[in-house]
Image (cartoon, rainbow over all chains, first blue to last red; front, side, top):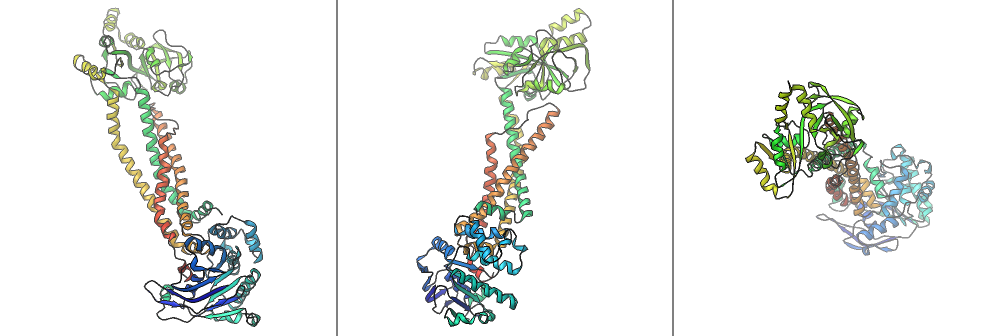
Amino acid sequence: MIRTQGLQYHYPKGPTLSFPDVDVPQGTVLLLSGPSGCGKSTWLALVAALVAPSAGQITVADQALDALKNVAADAWRAGAIGFLPQRLHLSAALTVQQNLSVAQWASGHAENPAAIQTALAALGVAELAQRKPAQLSGGQAQRVALARAVLLKPKVILADEPTASLDDEAAADAVALLLSTAQAQGATLVIATHDARVAALMPADLSVQKRLQLLQLKRQSNPVERLYVE
Amino acid sequence: MKTLSLAWSYLWSRPLSAALNLLLLSLGLASITFLLLVSHQLNQAFERDLQGIDVVVGAKGSPMQLILSGVFHIDVPPGNVPLKAVQELQKHPMVAQVIPISLGDNFGSFRIVGTSHDYISHYQATLAQGQFWTKPLQVVLGATAARKLGLVLGNTFVGSHGLGAGGHAHGDSIYTVVGILAPSGSVLDRLILTDTESVWKVHEDYTALDDEDRQIMIEEREITMALVRYKTPLAAVSFPRFVNTSTEMQAAAPAVEITRLLSMLGLGTDVLRAFAGVLLLTAGLSVFIALWSAVRERRGDLALLRMLGAPPAKVAALLLLEALWLGLLAALLGVLAGQGMTAALAWMLALDNSLLIGGMAWPVVLWVVPMVALGVSLVAALLPALGAYRISVLELLQGR
């Protein structure tokens, strides 16, 4: 679950971004949309406890984030948040297996090859364990990155622009994969995107069951984020 | 996954740059190793061969030449001194022992040294085979000399004039090998030792015209120099002055001359040391540039590690360890290469039998090399590691 109240983030020497309140129950989906520069990345960073809000409260997976500092925040993030970055960031120096074990290393968990096998198998890429990322197709790489994101059974999965630069068919596959993985894990799924196709790809029964929320961010005045992007 | 093996994987993800930096670092460290080993071995050789020799008395000339020729046997002596004058020294109240040294001939470029049994016992050398000489023209071989010349007990040979190969052969005087010394690590290893009488005999037999002539020669017998041991350390103050002022000979104190020699060599080693320093500096800079660009290249990967829950210190440690791996490997290669260079130098010196350096040595001071390696790589990695420490995950999210 993710709950925010009066959330604001003030960029040093920049503008202050304000975010609408949300209350996302555990196991449901939040579609975070809006044009680039509207604060999607900042919102993700706030939820992942990478930056602290200048005002307001966030509670993620039953954890009030203002109580977390530095190393404690890192340790919490390792277990509670699964992150699927836009450019996947699989390390080219390592095999698929090693790329996943990096997640265990980063979180301070002991290396657990069995868990890695299970995570890869759940996404149908177990036989690719010994390959290097360069030897993977785009779809395979995304599955591997998703396996890495859910390896430690996070409560919340954050997917950043998962459909960027994918054709319609691949985008549909990617979204379906995210939804099914999150559901299988019982995890809350946040998809941050400026891609209008994603909303259309959401299955109707999600809305019917009130398991889908939309958080539409608007471009805010003097968006300093755009300066960062470009 | 262990941090060490992860750092190893990252290091070799750019094999060319890693190998290049390894090479640069290793070269610098090899030079340092080489310098350390050579100066260690030189010092050891000097110390070993000088032990117990308080002063060397010989013909007037360069005192250093006297020491180098008489103690280390790597130079020609300045001349000869009358036997009688040396015998006078023996009676001096401050003198405990006088070992005569007579040079002049060689066999297969190994020096034939006319001396007394005292010379052998001075270096605590023992016989491996045979016995000591009992009469002139019997020789005892140093271990290296025996091995290189391929001589065994009972072999005979003819010495040639001069201290290097190729001199006139003394055809009438035949030496017989009666003993071979066990290796002692001292200068004796590469000498052919015989009685002082032998040297006189060879030259008198060769040049004397008749008995009367021979009698005159016996009266005028000379030796090349004498190694003197004092009864009391106080003698160091007065004895050399006594010799230098009241006799036709000169006294040279090995300790003083060697200090002088080392300070002259010092300029050369300073240049080498500066060279090694420049090499290391270059290597350090190169490692720094490589790591710095690695941090820039892998910004995303490193930020992702933070996203995956790694504390900043862990990410920075990854960078440091990568540099430490490099330093460790370079230290290993550098020490091996330095040993190789020293061995090559020893081999070259062995060709003219001036064996001051040789064999593998692992002096404690060699620990300096891995220390320097780790120091350089750590310093080079400091800024990149700081960069990794401060990497912003927000930038990753913003697609940079």
